[in-house]
Image 1: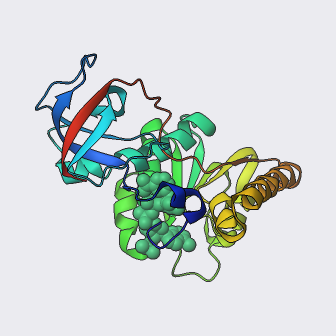
Image 2 (image 1 turned 30 degrees about the vertical axis):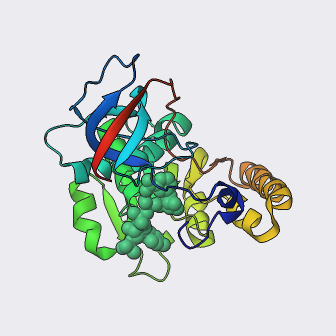
Length: 256
Ligand SMILES: NC(=O)c1ccc[n+]([C@@H]2O[C@H](COP(=O)([O-])OP(=O)(O)OC[C@H]3O[C@@H](n4cnc5c(N)ncnc54)[C@H](OP(=O)(O)O)[C@@H]3O)[C@@H](O)[C@H]2O)c1
């Protein structure tokens, strides 16, 4: 975004404060806020559609966008969790509805969304395979992945990955990873990508042409994958299912 991605959508909103995650102390609360008190240490994330951001000293979040920060994590650690973890949660729990014993492939398990996806799936009792760079393999195995394949060491990683999967979370979303992910899915499985074409096509052709073309491309892919692979294609699903209640708190962000 800093280098201009999504400018067709965001340019009219400039100047724009970026950032979704926040961790800090409650500085003030609205009259109807029940569960938070001034001085409490909290962390959370703004709704994906919020126009204001959190790269600020003070951020305004609604009551249901915040949770008490566990004492075991610092503000820096806590602020790295919410949006990435909610993005992973939404795909795995709301879209794929993963359950104990299911097999999940996380493409790009070393990133913020991928690492969250691995931990959520392992905690659910799934068997997790991931692709990642070689430096992070030990960490992902320690988090409970059954297999971690170094995407930098093999020319073709698809034959190296063992078995087929009930769901694929592709956090990279380039044609090469899309091919691997869709080929390795069981029929009826979910391929979930984070890369839609809406922003890129709108940047290139403008919103009135870019958005309908992106919708048409997605529809075509969905029909194609349904008939060729018998699988569902998930839209980029960012952030949370949280809905704003209008009950807001000011959070003084120590670290964002
Ligand atoms: N973070 C969020 O809160 C959030 C929320 C919504 C959507 N997203 C979107 O989700 C996507 C991923 O974001 P992220 O924050 O998780 O990224 P990130 O933390 O920057 O991590 C990306 C990871 O992908 C790995 N990687 C790159 N190419 C790969 C490949 N071909 N195969 C396997 N792994 C590969 C990198 O490993 P190496 O470093 O070892 O190369 C790195 O660990 C982005 O499109 C982002 O816009 C992010």
